[in-house]
Amino acid sequence: MPSGTSATESRSGGQCQTMGAMLTGKVAIVTGSSSGIGKATALRLAREGAAVCGVAERNVGGGEATAEEVQAAGGQSLFVQANVRLGVDCTRVVEAALQAFGRIDILVNNAGITRASPLADMDEAFWDTVIDTNLKSVYLMSRAALGDMLSRGRGSVVNISSVHAVATRPGHAAYAASKAGMCGMTRALACEYGPLGVRFNCVLPGTIDVSLYPRSAQPVDRPAWTPRESDVQVMKRLGSPDEVASVVCFLASEESSFVNGATLTVDGGLLAMLRDR
Image 1: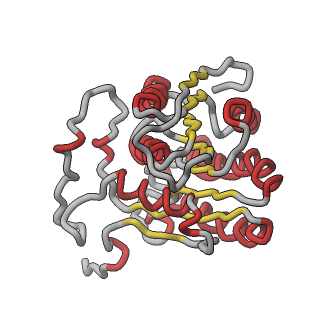
Image 2 (image 1 turned 135 degrees about the horizontal axis):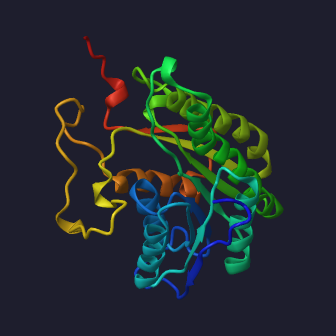
Image 3 (image 1 turned 135 degrees about the vertical axis):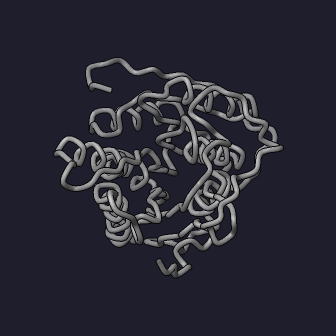
């Protein structure tokens, strides 16, 4: 969203009734909260007691729906429409979260896009869009949120990378570069700010079936939902967004208080298998 465009912000209140105690009193920002892993993460953090500020640029309806679902479960939520490729918008997200909840304890950099193109056909605009969305946004959001965390001497930043940071396929040069760069940035910032109480960690999801939390408003029977089967996956199925969200929640909590600069793979063993062509 251009910096001069007004944001869509919606807030819902209340204290979670059925939530756990792992993150009670904490405040989390989750980018890309409108669907998929981002939505699953926002809901999981809320179930553990955190107030959640969700962020999305294009899928405003999905972002608002996530906030409403948190509210329906008794949690506290805020949705901010913003373009995380722009520093001014990232600053505005942080300011909105601070105004609503008074602090920031957790940042989940989840916003991203997957695009493929052979290098010969890849123009600069394609490259810049992928790198800015997947990597520059992590730099901008982390920089914006860091000040409040440092003021209290604690915080957790979780970056959602991909198995493409380690092993990839043809046509994914920009995407793989953005995800590998995210891992390198995570390690550097973990060294820089770990001594000051702010931890940075990275999650590498494999092939995840995001149909549990789709971009559309189509209803999903969540209790009956199961990930799609797959002949090429070690566990013979795709992963669930909830399985990624549970790892994010662990890294966001004090249960992982000595985990810093780590890269946790959530891929069902995909990277562990050697495949002969």
